[in-house]
Image (cartoon, rainbow, N blue to C red; front, side, top):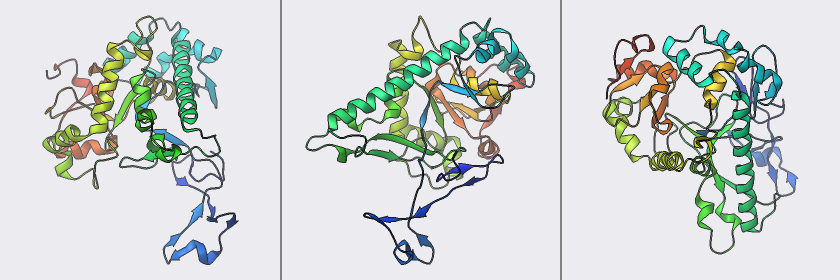
Length: 336
């Protein structure tokens, strides 16, 4: 990120930023005007702010290619070679056998894996462009006065300093009756069209849930957890949208050209690092099984995967969840 951005992240993961004095109409405010009290300042960002859509994971247009620095498009020869030559095998050495075998089964001979990902990434990007263009046209606004509405989950920032949000057109863009489509966030539009895959990460499950302490035992004990999941309207709507997109064979679920590697799987291979988030199967309401991060693929439907941050894993186990480890997966059947 640019050095003068509002949110930046150092190589060590430290988040920092840069801001300016707040603006009052057409001028920069004075020191007295930006000082509300002894612990509050009004500031203005001098640079763009990135957003990351909650609940979805779109195919990557580009990503760091193993063995070099910098992002390369997935249509680059180096990415194509990475899969077709079998170079990806070097990244699987530290993975569990079940996880490594799962990835090998998807990649196969490696042909078209990179280009398949790029095709779906371009489709997702174009769909989002078209949706925003359509909303702007319906509102009569231009890019200079069109506004977005953002709703947040429990966390506001990701590890890259981007705002984590659900995002849609602001209702104030429209004069008179607001089109029904304007109240549908771009997150769920992507899922409903089959252009992105779901990626539900606790505790960012719904912007309308009041979760003050995600490690409260009443929340993370199996009974409390399932009560939250059942009341998460945004989550349940997203799951239904994904199920419908898959049944209608849209986008990434297209029978003739389905998405081969999930975006998270592509990133896992590029980094050579195992997944770190535990998983709970939303398709088994009431279960108390916490799956090892490398067993995410054992949950067949992607919309049934609720990811639990790795640093929460121990607390979930103390709260009554039973961990199924990857190394025991072949010896013990998953609960039905």
